[in-house]
Image 1: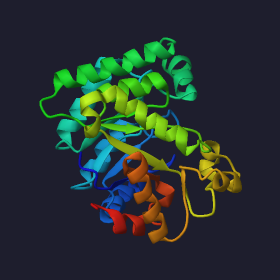
Image 2: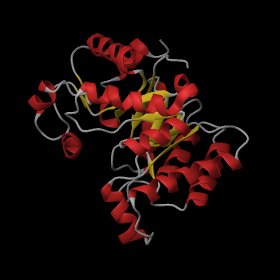
Image 3: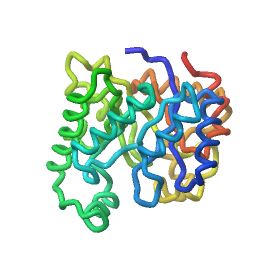
Length: 273
């Protein structure tokens, strides 16, 4: 596996069309590899957003962070993902997971999808991937968000990229165990998996829009040596990211779009290294 660093941007909640296009252009100009839209009914729909971002850029890869398997029938999700990969010249990366509690509830209450068990959500995820692979001739990179033990086992079997959702105060020993579980499930293909780390806090302030994800206690994050935070100078942050690659295997780093400009010097230091 090529363990050189690449960097992505995860979108904020609200954009006009022009703001979204501007973010895509700026991310490309600053050397980010990907622009990703989360899946939520209060957000722009990820796949149309990715398509628009691709039309105003030339090298930027686009994707979802991540589609909830409970929201779209597997064949429909695969059809749309394959279409987007084709129309973007294969600059699309499919991110998918079993959904968070809010999105899974919305799938039932607002979209009218059937209620699902955790096992059924994993089956939907697997079926989506199987349908996608049956449609394509050029492989679309697949990211799986693997927060649970069974998700990590499935990610080891299917994923090209794995992101490991965990709480803001998760211990590093626990994160290392999560990576080991993916690698064990991957077997002979373990070295082919790219690990992605999503950073929510850069510096010494927690952006208000991100408080629901990390809490509002900066000192608690510092005391826990939170994996969702980076602090210090650009070089100090770059050094910490390199340590995390050495220890955990993380080489694909994503940051919230709130940090697009602030994090750019770190991207400049590490991109392609």
